[in-house]
Amino acid sequence: MNINQIIKNLISRITFFILLALLLTLTLSSCNQKISVTPPDIPPPNGYIFLSSYPEGFQIYLNGLQRRRTTPDSLNWLKTGTYQITLKKEFFRDTSFTVNIVEGEKRSKFIDFSKNPLMLGNIVCTSLPDSAEIFINDSSTGKITPATLKNIIPGNYEIRYHIKNHIDDSIQVAVKSGEISTAAKLILVDTTLWRDYTTKNSSIFSDDLTCITIDKKNVVWLGTSGSGVISFDGINWGGKQLFSILPSSNVNCVTVNKNDTLFIGTNRGFVTYDGVNEHMYGFRTSGLANYWVNTIGFDNSGTWYIGTQGGLTASNGTSWLTYNFETIPDTFITSIFNDNSGNLWVGMKNKGLMVRKNNNWLHYYANGGSIINNYVTAFAESQLGEIWIGFGVIPGSGVGLSYYLNNTWQNAYVLPASSQTNAILIDKNNVKWVATDKGLVRFTNSADVTVFNPGNTGLNINDVTGVAQDSRGNIWISTNGGGLVEYKGNH
Image 1 (cartoon, rainbow, N blue to C red):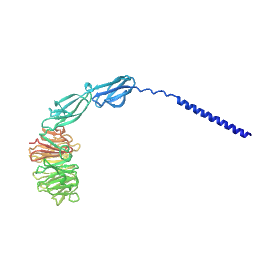
Image 2: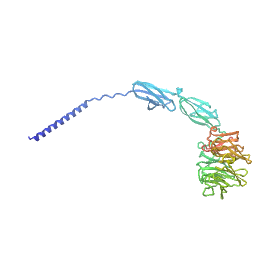
Image 3: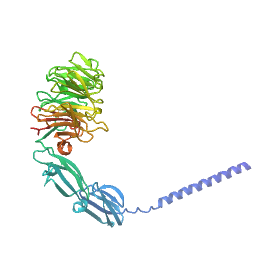
């Protein structure tokens, strides 16, 4: 046997013993695993408490941590010990208390929040007029205004008032622990005096009214901001469907002439409607000075006068005449009025007013000491022949009305501060009604002034855009945002 053979044999033996050693190691390891024992799991703590309350729905916190549970519910797997529990709910004061938990015992805790005066609140109920029956969530309280509802469980409540000859009204009131709510104050609409027509209580299709007129049949015509024209005969609503050729849904003025033809001015021209036929006069299809029509009036001969943002145009429907700057010094025409003597009055935005008497034009403006300011918005004539003038707001100028009689100007400061006059009506009793953006003003003289607004009527008549009277003596009021309002107390 040579040396190489001896080395090969030696390597084979060494390899054999290594493999044998590895096999024995694996075998012993396997045997050890088969006989090893895992320690048993420690059982979880079994402390338990059930939490309930009146009312229900309080969020449960344990030692300051929210457990994402609300009453009634339980807390499980608690160790023996002392815990702080806090219950939280909107409008309630937080309530905290400690509990001692013993494993293996089931405990419970009930809290009646209605028994704790500190958790309750009060509601002060007031109405105008008073002596209204008070309902809470549609249940009568047996009380009348003014009254305080005491020891009310916190939460949201509907407070409703009822009194004869008034429209029921309600309000949502939030009651909080330990607080007195004074939010339940309502003004009830007197149905013997007022009636409103809104998109919530009638078939009127817009609350955003811009102007009003009444024809000889006592049909009320209303212009709207974005919804065209509305008509109302006391029962039926219409108007919108009549005017397929109305050039714009934004109506700036509505009026009727002596033949009871309706004129509708928009920011794209104007339309006439005689009860059967309608005709549209646009900027390019007529002789208008400008397509934006602000106001339309008529003289004794029946001539139309169309005031636009580009000047004053006269027309008979066929021929057109736009007055030059020498005659009418302002191109922005705001109002037109023909008085009982046949004088034509033209209001301007920047230059006061012009009046045509015996074919002569006279100019009146604030700098001459005649009128309150140069932004003229409305005209009306009293039973005494006074011509009353309303104005827009110009910073630094007065707020009120001017009137003209026997070649003399006088001023009446009877309007709310910073208010703009949108229209003037002088009724059959010589009472003045002024539509302003701060309410409806009624007065006979400076000592007898009433401002009707949401604060004393319960109606949304803060921004009054127009006022008119029907043949029965009722006053009709167009508003921006509050729909149409009827005043029945003028008989």
